[in-house]
Amino acid sequence: MLSSNQPGEVVNAARAICRALKSAGTDIHALADGIGNGKLSEAEMKRLYDAGYAAGVQATEDKLRGAGFHDVDDEGYEGLERMAMDCAIRPERLRNEREREFVRQMVRWLARGRKLSEKQETWLRDCHDRVRR
Image 1 (cartoon, rainbow, N blue to C red):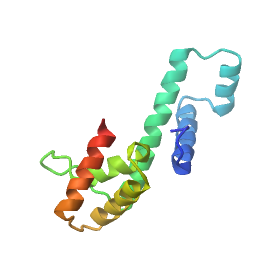
Image 2: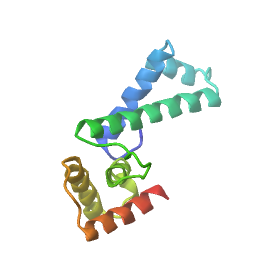
Image 3: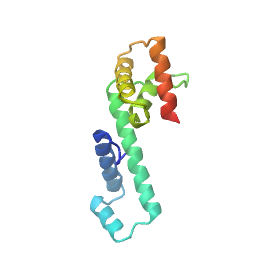
Image 4: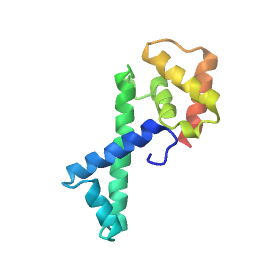
């Protein structure tokens, strides 16, 4: 997420890393010192990176839920809202700006309870298939 071309994702990832470090009783300066002095092993760096990444994804999902996103439905079926959100948090996997705008619009529509046309649902499912690969 730190290397994303989406500024919000970069900020969320950086904040998530800081939260992960704080919960481990340290801070970003200690991380930098440790890397510079070779004190952190590759496994430790990967653990910190993974924790920051997971926290960044969670922050993005929480932000979308705050906009009215609804989770997976009672039957365990991965609903259209979840598909739209999966696509929205991974825009780099979509083909072009037209698809990214379509996904953003579908997140808004579905959060407001609007029904999609058959064509829109098919396109969203196609986008989701690409994002999940």
